[in-house]
Image (cartoon, rainbow, N blue to C red):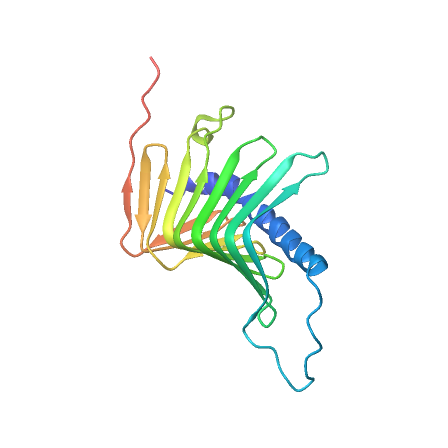
Length: 206
């Protein structure tokens, strides 16, 4: 299992955290520039967990220096909280494209990111899909899916965690466990709890 999945996660996670950081940073910058300053608050009043601005049915796109679409974040409703410096998005959907043109999507019922998007949580029917690649090694050409109720992505260090059951599918191969931790630096994937694996051997060419 450690020989197959780490390489796949490595390719997938190489671009997703960077895309998330860029999109959420752009979101915060754009909203701060376009939102009127709030009324002067009392010096004795501390921050409360109340949104200081909202976004409805929004879409934010990030392009590279050549004008190529790098990431597209969409949401039904977005709320920014000044006390925790976080952004909460309902019906979050993120599409990112790597340098090879390979599409990755991440969706969930709700998403939560900190101010610089170095931590992003996908909650409720969380799904990450890396589409098949037409060029390259056979093992890298198949579709990759991750499904669960929770996914916590750390950009620095490059770690993905889930304390809830997860299902992983790579082509015809399927894996599941009660919890997940993947470290992209050490390329170690850990599935704990009740772990199951179903692997179909690749047919040999004649």
